[in-house]
Image 1 (spheres, rainbow, N blue to C red):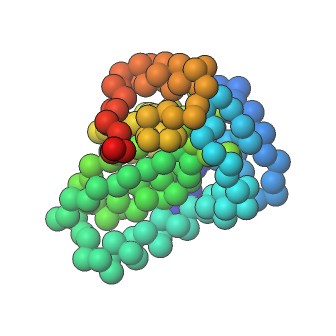
Image 2 (image 1 turned 90 degrees about the horizontal axis):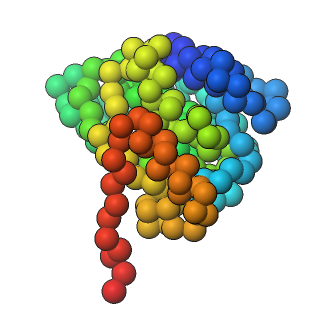
Length: 182
């Protein structure tokens, strides 16, 4: 129920901000899906994969996986999220909050097609809306730009500028890592 509520929160905030639902699918929570392309789209994404992931019942699966792994309210877990699948990010955070685990959340802003790739509706925007309107208790402690090298590789200068502006708007410093190539 929590994941479904949070999907509704995000869809309502996107609509209220005038961010269009560019994907007209006959599936519940299609409003969670982003655009086919934007300035910070990192790679091509599968509309079918995004549609399948737009199911709040994935939160119940995550609760089951936590249980099977022995994760409970005494646990602290790391969660790595991508803007490519905001629906799965929401489901995972809803499961963690339901179980009551402590978390360290790491996220990336860039997104493949149909993910959190609309200006004004990035993962950081969604996370902020959930804290404001959905009582989300977690927040990203480390945020990267995403894309190649997790540093915006392959994105246009405009896309990088949009991601930097988003991070600044949320008071976040984007983490950058040295290349591991020799």
